[in-house]
Length: 536
Image 1: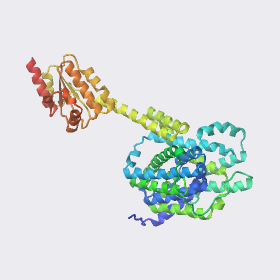
Image 2 (image 1 turned 45 degrees about the vertical axis):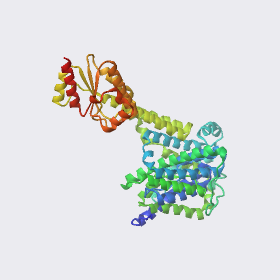
Image 3 (image 1 turned 135 degrees about the horizontal axis):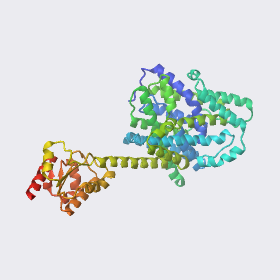
Image 4 (image 1 turned 180 degrees about the vertical axis):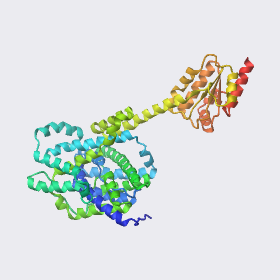
């Protein structure tokens, strides 16, 4: 049975209330940005915030709508021609997938996505949010995709509503420049929301949110349409993967601040339950929110009660203050969203990227560009594949350098004496460790290059090779075939059980005799020296 820790009740209540106040303008703004409306943002913040806190694996984490999730939802909303029921179905399905991820233990693998890939798509998402809000800052309703918004930009620039531009930019400035001393009591985003809305009442007729329903949400059941099934399922997969990565990254931040360790798979289950419920009540998908989590922890929140209190605060606002939110101008929310986009961009890495590996920077830029101009899932897949190929190449180069031709530096004097007794006709090759498939292709070539004229016996030492894949086994087979073809003897030493099993299973063993396998390098050298002596 799930138990709540009440030892820090006062701090958790304080942190939860503060996080709830910070979450209010973001939930409204992200709901509008998704195309599903401000209340969808509020319902999503309440559902994901409460259930992810209750069932998740990061006690101090605050969850709710985030920029990355909203970008996917906005694209889905546009591609489905505004069919909200199908969008909410995708949210529910994403939640179910996250639960499956957690049950299957996939959480530990999601954290293996390379940092340049994460940095690239997070920065790309930040760029998308900003691009989509530029037109709104100028008083226009822009297309819901970044390419369309960029194409529409000249039209917006030709007809700027300077009142909305000034109000939106002013909101952005307030959100950034709000004094930290006051921010302890009234967060900058909330202050910007209130001030911008009050100012708009005296400015004139500006586009506002309008009538917002209050009260409890209605239940929405999943809907499936064969013609749009692929789009919905694809979006659900993207939401599930993106939300999982976003949440687990925030969990790492929480770990560093609280000196604790989260349970990644349990966190995914909690996030999945939250998103499933969010879809059922007409809320947008969410994930662990870094800024809100930091605010919670700094305000005293440590345990899951704080996340539940945060959701309770938003629920109270939904039940009582919906009429006031109707007067919030779109320009004010656009200003807040631009700040959200700027905060998501990985400025810390961009500032120092030129000092790091050049390939990592190139990879980050590729993923960023694909995120903005193609789509998120393609960007992540391509980024991970490129990063994996680059890593395999680096490992292969290291492994090939470690394949030592060691006649001149054997550590054992006895082995060195035996090698000298062979009069240069014995060559020893030491595999420095496990062979990856990237290195295996060139192993045979490396051995051929280093075998000098006059060599009669090759000794392959496997002492530091605990396992072997098919590619490496085929490389050993190539060496054996070359040795047999050139009339050289091939000895194997220190072949470990797992390696021997692979060689036997692939019939590589047929290319060398059982008596040519020795328990250690010394025995192999002794046998080789005796053969050379007898031939002389």
